[in-house]
Amino acid sequence: MQKHLLKIFFIVFFVLFGVLLSKNIAPHYIRNISSASEMYMDVEGTDIKGEKISLPYTLKNVEKGAKIHLYNDFVISSNDMMYIKTVYAPLRITADNAEIYSYGQKGTYPDILKDPPTQVCLINIPTVEKVTHIEFIYEFPYDRDNLSLSPPLYGEGSDLMRYLFFKMSVPFVLSILQIFIGAFLIIMYIALLPSEIKESSLMWLGLFGISFGLWSLCECNFTVLIVQRPYLLYIGAFMSMFVTSLPILMFTRCIQDKKSKVLDALTAVTAVSVLAAVILQLSGRLPFHKSMFFFHYLMLANFIAMCTIVCIRGTKDKNTKKFSAAYVAMTFFVMMELINYSLNFVSYNTLFFQIGVLVFLVMNEYLTGIDLRNIVMLRTENRRLAENMAIMEKQMTAQYESGRMLIDTAEELKRQRHDLKHQYIVLDGFIDEKEYGKAKAYIEKLIKAIPQDNVKVYCRNDALNAIITYYAKAAEDNNIKYDISLEIPPEISKGSDLTDSQLCIVFGNLLENAVEACCRTESQGRFIKLCSYIKAGILYIAMDNNCDGNIHIENGGFISSKRNEIGTGINSITAIAKKHGGDAKFNVNGDVFESSVCICI
Image 1 (cartoon, rainbow, N blue to C red):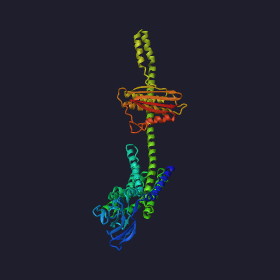
Image 2: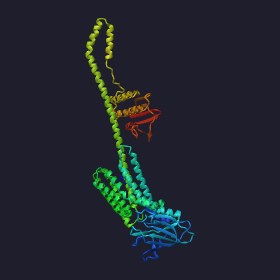
Image 3: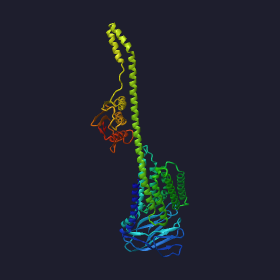
Image 4: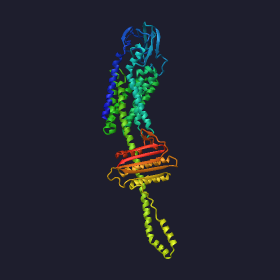
C-alpha cells in the first residue's frame, strides 16, 4: 500500500510542476498579447484626477457607488479583442466616447445582490487602425470595502484565447477531473444498489468530489469566460463551497465502526450554517461573499477535527488507520490554501485546495476500492461455502434415506427368517398331501414377499453415491431421463489430496445445475447424461444435459439464473479442479449444455 501512496504523491508533484511550468511558459509562448497595465484614474468625490497608476490596483476608502474612471490611449488592430475583468462592480466601457460594453447596471441582476457578481469576458473594439481613447467606468461596490482593478489584455482573438487558456485552465481542468471522479464513484454506488453490497461511503465520497469540483469550476475565471452566466456561477460557487464539508463529514462517519458525537455535532453545525447563509443572502442582510470567510474557517475546523478523530481512532482500529494519511494530507492542503488566501504567494485561488482534494479523492478511492474488492471476495466465498454446505446437507439426507431403507429391509428379513420355520411346515404339509399346485402358489407368494433392495448403487464411494442418489431422485420427480455411469474408487482420498467432500461438491454442483437447467425446458425430452472414468491418475468427468439455450456469458463466465452474476457452482467446480492440477470447461451447443472436468487424483 505504501508504494501506491508514493505513486499518488509523485502524481501530485508532477501536477504542481505542470502548474508552475504552464504559468512560466504561457507569457513567452504567446507574444502577441499586450497588457494595459498603465492607466490614468479619476475618482468622483475625491481629489484624484488624472493620477497615473499601475494595474493591478486596489482602491480603498471611496464612497459607495462613486464612479471610478480609468482611461488611456491604445493602438488597436482591426482583428484585436480585449479581455476585461470586473470584481463585484458595475462597468461601462467607451471607445472615443461611444459606449461599447456595459455590465452590472441596476436592474440587470437580482435585487438580493447589492453588487453584480464578478465578470470576465472578451469584447470587440471597433477601430480603424488608429489611436483610440478607451475609458473604463467602474462604480465602487456597496457591499465591499475595496475595488480590485485588473489590467485589460488585448490582442488577436485566437492568441488571446490561447493565452487565457494557459493562464486559467489548470484549476478548470482540475475541477473537471474532480467532478469526473465524484461522478464515477456515484455511478459505482448506483451499480451496487441491486446487489447485497451497500457501500454508502462511495456515495458520500463521490458527492464530496462533485461538490468541491463544482465550487472550483464555478469560481474559475475560465468558466465565467466561456459560460457567461455570472449570476448562476456566483450562486453555484458559494453554495457548493458551503455544502462541501457535509458529504466528507458523512464519509468520515461511514469509515468508522463507532458513532462519533463530535462528527454528529459538526454535521449539524455545518447544515445549520448553510441554511443560515442562504436565508441571510435572500434577505439581503449578508451576501455570500461575506459568509465565505466563516465557512473557510468552519471547513478548516471540520478537517482538523476529522483528521484528529481518524488518527486517534486509527490507533485502535486498523480499518480506520489506513485512511489517516489521506486526512492528514487534506488538512495540510486546506491550511496552505487559507495561508495563500491571505498572503497570495500563488496566484491561482483554491489551487492548494484542489490539489488536496484530488489527493484525498484518489487515495480514498483506492482504499475504498480495496475494501469493496475484499467485501465482494468475502461475500462470494461465503456464498460458495453456503452452497457447498447445502450440498453436504443433501448428501447427509440421501445417506440417511439409504440407511433407513437398509434398516427397513433388514427388519423385514429378520421377520421373514422368524417365520421361515412355520412356512417350511406349511410346505411340508402340502407335499405330504401331494398338493403340489398349492405348494407352488405358496412359494410364489413367499417370493413376492421378499423385500426389494431400494438402494441403488451408482458408484462404490458411499459419500458420492448418496449425493448422486439425491439428484437422481430429483431428476425422477421432474420427469428427467438420466443415464449415470461412474467409475469412482470407494476411498478416493487414499494417496490423493482430493477429499470425498470436494468430490461431492463437484458432482453435486454439476447435477444441481443440470436439474435446474432441465426444469427450465419443456417436460418432454429432458435428459442428463453423466459419466466418469479414471486414466493415468486423472479423473475425467463428462456431463451433457439439455437447456433452453438462453445462457448469458460475461467476461468468459456463465451468469447464474438465480443472481445476475457469475455462477458460484461453476466457480466452485473450477476452483477445486485447478487446485488439484486439473481444469473445468463448459460449453453451450445449441440446446445442450456440455460440462467437462478433469482432476488429478
